[in-house]
Image (cartoon, rainbow, N blue to C red; front, top):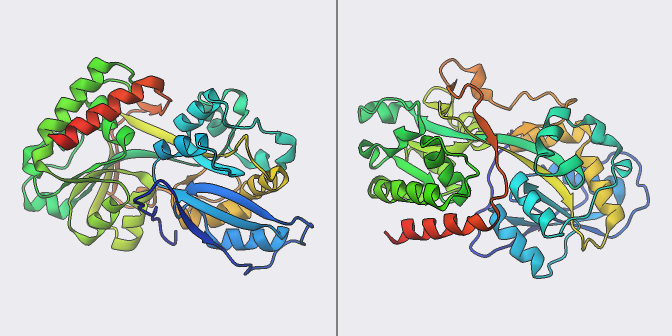
Length: 357
């Protein structure tokens, strides 16, 4: 993995960049024009983009976002992209809003490389895998600096409830991504991460309000940087971000756990928007991303678990190769994130209450 860093942005979308033609590959197949892509920031290898441009003659225009929740209002406002990378529950919601084009799999021959179990898992949100092609998957757990917890005499966590310890004051960060934040309290109470119950979500909101006095801050992308710099000692974090810290900061000081109550798992996937202007280019791009050499480039760059069966996953869960660096208490109690439909208002209102408290 070169690095993993999703750009923080203060507006809904910013242009990431337009990459130059740098690399050689297969023959140019005569395509021309642009492929407009909407993606999480820094979620694709620059080298992979350059090779695609050289092979096809297409120029990649990429805009980025930080959280799935930002995407739907942008697309509904009329913004036009050919390809979008989004997560499972957002795919489910976009299907319900008729924003995605059903995929003609005959135009993506390299889809045979995609792991069948991951396709089956994603089919919960995308029936018959009709609208999305998996790209990466990951999970949420608790990441901590062992030395910093030792210094304040706090035992290493095993449960989500361990994040609600007042003795963590000065060391604790929490997620500002709403669904990721609520995972901790929902699973602590043995509720579903996909709860649509206002009562359950309100219980979790009260937990976070009570926790707030000893939380240093709420953030997403910055958490791994603050963990790496030593500014924070513990936080809920996704598996790919964890690997960034391991590979950049060394293997001895940190540990990542899947709490015993279980957690969420997620799949990010490529989709074609219904208002796409370059369908031929969109199919070409998604098929290219399923190619094993390209999947390897992206896996090494991004750090999340690849879904490509032909790609050696040497970087994913690097911590599993380190004694004492990764612990799984969950006993398989993992839930795929789903669309919570109108119940998202309960989460948003709850988060606003937390911020205002």
